Length: 315
Image (cartoon, rainbow, N blue to C red; front, side, top):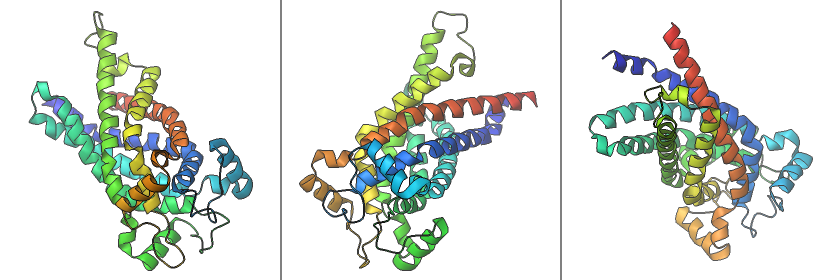
């Protein structure tokens, strides 16, 4: 009974740890995120008048820095930081509660099911909370000196303009591929937790620390490896949905007509004109973002959580 109450008191610590880790990683990886977004929408046929052609990731970063400065590299930063931090914090809190709820009805032989079901539920919540911010971030990142439409002045102006010109529902363009990307979160979280258990078992097998708290067994190197490995395992099968979402979230042309009608239209266009490679445009900056950032995210998350738990026990 006391253990259950103690776990319930610790729920807010998971949210704080997530907020800290998400904000720090968004700040570091945002320039690469801008590059990734511009690669994802460049179909090589229609956007040459609005998006400059980049040879590779390094060329893109230097070109944006030279032509647009630091503002170009951090276009859409506020929308990305606010959306990612808040939605991830809420999503993880929901995940922890849902995991406890699912675990009650599961036997020990089905212990992997609570992690998967909880992650899927939390992922859907994150998608719904983040999508308006994701759309605004995408559009701000795609604003270049070559754009002909009046640029958004910032986060608030973007929300206001989109609502006025396209309606409230436009803020949820791309929600369908986003919901398909829930599988990314499920894979990521589940692989992380399963690998975490495996490493703990390997380190404690045949030793005197078998019943020691996992927080005291694993170190920052372990968390880095766990974060990077689980992230890569989730990226490749789900990345095409990210390309589809980004293209759906582009600002309509000057006549007010969206470039793509729906997700299926994008799939057909990419398959016809760009082939399989089109579904993986921007994958290089994505990997450059996710491999080191996933490591840092879980290092920050686990260590902040460890400190908060320690402070809680000392109170």
